[in-house]
Every structure is written in C-alpha cells, then in structure tokens.
Length: 193
Image 1: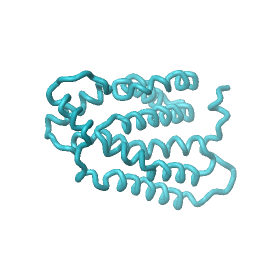
Image 2: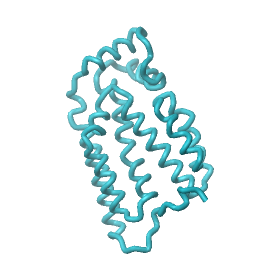
Image 3: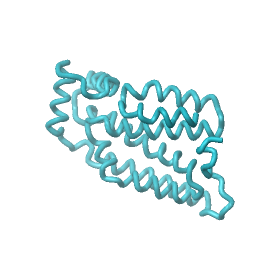
C-alpha cells in the first residue's frame, strides 16, 4: 500500500454542498481566473529582459539559458507574427491550462468539493500566478507541467486506465524540454505510479 492509497479520494460520506452549486462555483472560479490572466494582456510592453531574450531568439545569438522546447516553440510562433501577445502566448495558455488541472488535483485529494473550489480560487487570484501568465518567461509553463504530472498521476491511480498512464509518461518525457525543474518531481511521481 502506497501513501497515495491512504489519501481520501473524492468520495465522502459527509454531506456536502449540492453538486450543481459546486459545479457552478468551480466554473465561476475558472472563468474569473481566465479573465484575470487575459486582463491587460494585449496592452503590456516587454520588460527589458524579455526584449533581450526576444532579440536572442530572433537573431539566434546568445546562450540557451531557458528550456529549449519553450524557446523553440516560441520561435515558431514568432514566424507567424512578431508581437508581444504572441511572444507571451505559451505562458498565457499554460496559465489558463493550470487552473482546471489544479482543480482536478484538489478534487482527487480533498474530501470536500468546496475545498477544491477554494484552492482553485486561491490560484486563480494569486498575483504571481497571474503575472507569470503574462510574461515571456517559462514559469507558467513549468507550474502547469508540474500540475499536469500530479493530475495525470492521480487520475491514473484512481482509474488504473492505460490512457492516464500514457498521459503521465508522455508528460514526463516532454516536460523537461519546457521545464527543467520537473525532473525533481520524478522520484515521487514514479514511486506512486
């Protein structure tokens, strides 16, 4: 028996708020998080370090101190058009994707659905999480990939579905190209999977 087997997974015998009210609250929290991440997105100017990295990216000069997958994919996006929102789009998409992933994680590890909604709310309004979604920096992508690994692992442990195992393994293989820090999650991840 692994420690994860001892966690209270979703089901609870205690009375909880009506499922419809929880679903509506979760949807409202996710929508609010999306609004915060998109608010002002198209009027931001680049910080000096972001502009410098953009220049390195466009000219092919400088050392690659950022994850190569993140920089390569951003370079491909800049082939479409060179503008600030497109430059930051990977971080924005990652920040948006992290919200439902965190909700999935919390629904799988806490007994009360309302706690999952509140936890997701905390991420939705967190100023650093919102700011990371609007910057040409890989931090939002890193946070999203960590959340994805945990969410997929919990879904696999709950359902024992090969589909979720494939999602865990695919994410584990692809993630280091976008987030170097994800390798620190591997020991714990592979102990429970």
